[in-house]
Length: 136
Image 1 (cartoon, rainbow, N blue to C red):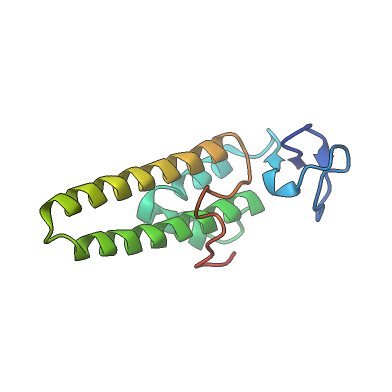
Image 2 (image 1 turned 45 degrees about the vertical axis):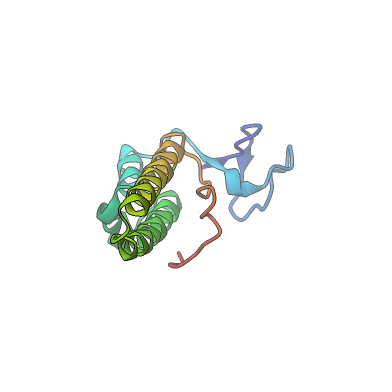
């Protein structure tokens, strides 16, 4: 069961916006009745290579599937970023700066994803939410 993230009204399957307040469904919240398995699988989606577990398991709920796709996209972008950082490894100061920035960005985006799962929200990650390397 899905509820509006703004007013809490129940949404129907396929709704693009809340019928009560007009909030787009992209910020939907899932009901408290979703299982704890969904919560743990959603959290795994943002823990690096462990994102493959919820992504590859069949018969996941749409909530878990959406977060698993976001987690895989984040993982691929992290790998690309770390490869780019390794290209500059021969420049001592630049290597340290880039490694710190990329590491903090990866940590922050993973943490935001985990917070979205804990709040039962189906929201894209900031800055990279529109990048779709893997489709759901």
